[in-house]
Length: 175
Ligand code: HEM
Image (cartoon, rainbow, N blue to C red; front, side):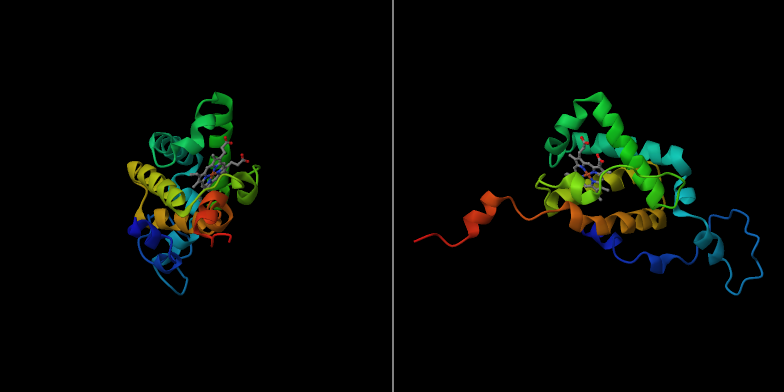
């Protein structure tokens, strides 16, 4: 778990190195081999839309099987149309966020998760399920880190304060 959180930390620093050698016309540039990796969009390095669809399918299946969080997704999983729409939204969101040609047309993260009572532990479990899916498709460490770095900042719009009941328990008693 710690590893995953660490992965959310500045991945930009890792940009140098390992270019997945697709031809690069700008050899005359001042810096050398890091250019290719830097210029290729994360979207392309992830493998484009098809690869993102495959990852999202696996990711959502992982969430549905994860007893730490699957209660959140029970209604979604039980409704084929709703599930398909949810997956489509996730695909477009990841596609757009990674520099791809898609447009996310769903709700804002705040709007989508408001009132759900998503806590830190749920968020971390979901990230773990995403990492599992990325690992299954052998997405590289660098790409994994970059994707998590794009999604990480959404956390503050998704995770909310503990439910009122829990907060009340820790509040001083009335006299
Ligand atoms: C970076 C983390 C997350 C991202 C990028 C994300 C993304 C999304 C997106 C794109 C939607 C669809 C919004 C719409 O319908 O317009 C959504 C809905 C939803 N999210 Fe998240 N989410 C994240 C974390 C979580 C967590 C931690 C939980 C709970 C454990 C959660 C539970 C849900 C549920 C239950 C829905 C409604 C699904 C439905 O439409 O039936 N999400 N999320």
